Image (cartoon, rainbow, N blue to C red; front, side):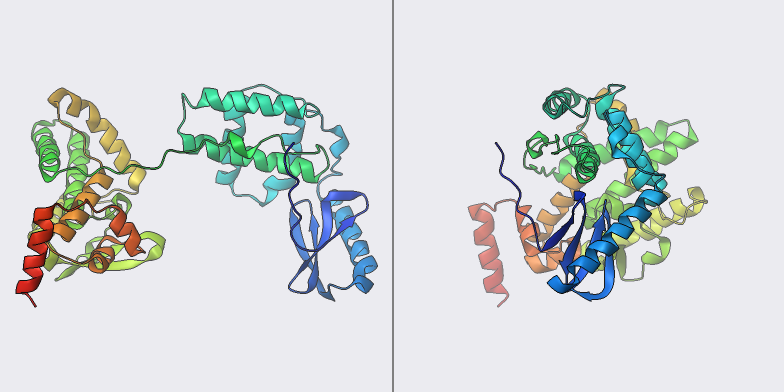
Length: 375
């Protein structure tokens, strides 16, 4: 039998709704919780003498909640279909359209036109457990875990509304991912991939296919110079290219600069090849390469994958190229981890160190000699 989860903080339960509606303390004041909706009771301190008044306010808010939601009645909820209809009536009014569609897709993925009896929680747990095993053959682990989280939220709603006693979606159902093992390509592998792209561009007859391949080629070339993330490459605009540096719009709206002096040839490549490509082929997009997002870039990669198999060329991942550049900065350019972190866009030095290849004894001796000669 599982452990009972310890209640967090102080709480006064409503006598008729012990799970779905209660008063709780925050910052010394009383707040109400009514089936997922939290609201303060203005300027009413958390004190026993205020409990009766707080419960009365809570009761009024429960009545208002029922009126807003068309006389919400949990007693009519016997199956998951009934529960999901009720959940949509209560919760969907506050959600964005995309979020609503995401929830519906998650339910569709697991239920697949099947219905579940809410009185048989053991059977529901067994069903979802076997369903996870089946879906692993079709979907990525993260997709299944995200869907489980959405469905667990629906069952949490059922617990709060006292439709069921406990949530049948257990934490052990989540797929434990294998720790990501990064790969670093070689400069030769990258060059082979780029050469195969160039040869495809030369013989491509359809303008659309030719332009897509050129976008992929220029994106990989830029990553090969700078080590940018592929999402960052997509966001480059022409005015980000300055006389002596490239301004990069990174994660979490953080900007960083990449000086052209770090990588000889980058400036000439951008001004002599990429910008003219933009002027001649990209007319309806504000972005330099005309790639709206990394999803579009993934489409170009998939389209070119079959051609790679024919040519027997190994596919190169953007992340592998990023790590290649990072290692070159550390080992060939002799830049310290703090400088590399700034150029690559890592928030912590430990992230940078995680991706650095172990240096050989010869490399270490060479670094020592280099440092002695420059002190």
